[in-house]
Length: 142
Image (cartoon, rainbow, N blue to C red; front, side, top):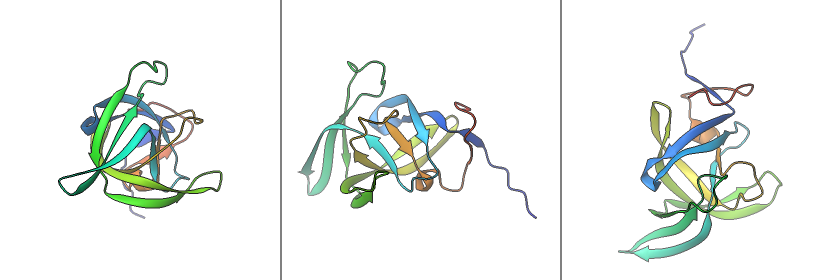
């Protein structure tokens, strides 16, 4: 059997979304979730030069809700997503770079209300791709 060397990440990691101006945001790694999702406030769709875009606010530090980052980004898709409670909703999808430790890659993220969740972002299976192994017993390996 061929052994493949892959970096191990924990169930919670600190990630950055550099294109959105977000650094050091605690992210829940969830291999049970297909898609990655991000909690946003004040989500508004608009069209600029014929391209559908969204504007939203993020409070990247859950311990400091006074810090807000206002983001503008192109919408790459609109998808129906079933949440963990079984309810389906249409969500805007964005594609943006994500940085975890020394690793950086593009990721699709759905925008939603995660206000009742412990973490502002969920990193799902599609976002992880085939590049990491997840050890759920540890946190913050990178």
